[in-house]
Image 1 (cartoon, rainbow, N blue to C red):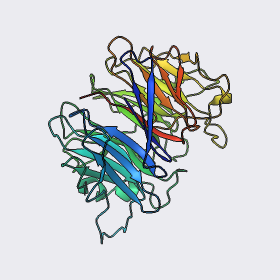
Image 2: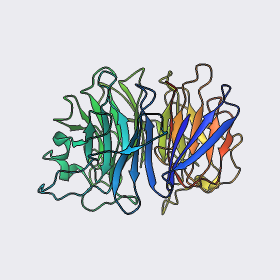
Image 3: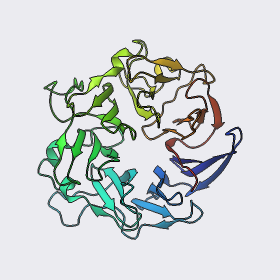
Length: 369
């Protein structure tokens, strides 16, 4: 099934066995902002939702029965009270399940760029002090200026499947950062990323990644959709390569989401948007398309069969996902105009599964228990 987080609540789409018929359910939490809704792949029953409940502020809602019933976290993510910086969490923005060897552990990213962790399935949350209180935090993070249009935020928490202490995360703005000790020490990982708004083109921080993905089958490979292009890195290299240079020049390589094939580290999808002038945040020339690479970014193919010939929308960073179908992976995108599009042949053809939803913030696939 698909979990869909929107500006006005949570919806679900459930397919039949052939993925040919879909049932839309919801909304739950109508009127509340659902920034990110994620099912736990480790147990197949738990679901967490990063919510902003009306005027009551940010919180996390949790379900242990696949979304039939929900309870608010008894201690939601928050900065420590009385801290010298006097930071207040504006929203919980991103959720990531922890390592398979640490059931119950989740990470949450917030705005401003705080990192939080739970070890009891999302009921009680604590700040990751090694990050939030790092001596470089105010240098690395856009704070308190909040220079990005939707507010500065921490997102893209990636856990190395080989080592629960090895994490990558993204800051908008700030860049990509890495820890190898569970979150005590951190280092920037931004060399090679184009950033014309920075005084030094090789500045180690201050960048604006939109979405960062680590491949589960090849965890030394990461992809990044940045404010300034599409990139790939293969560790232990410490410099990103701009694979977006291979996109058509009339489309460019600016966008929000980037999604990876669950089994093939060389296959990746992006949804470009118009990044010129005032950043209208619509498809380039109003012609929406997904672009797919089968060779790790060396070349790209436009995939727009079935999509509208003209459409003035875009896709946010959490609003693209894939399923786990063995023969032909499904790719799903949710738009800012409230449509959910699906391709069951890895991008070749697209079908609209739902329309007239609220603005879609996130789309995540969940496998049954």
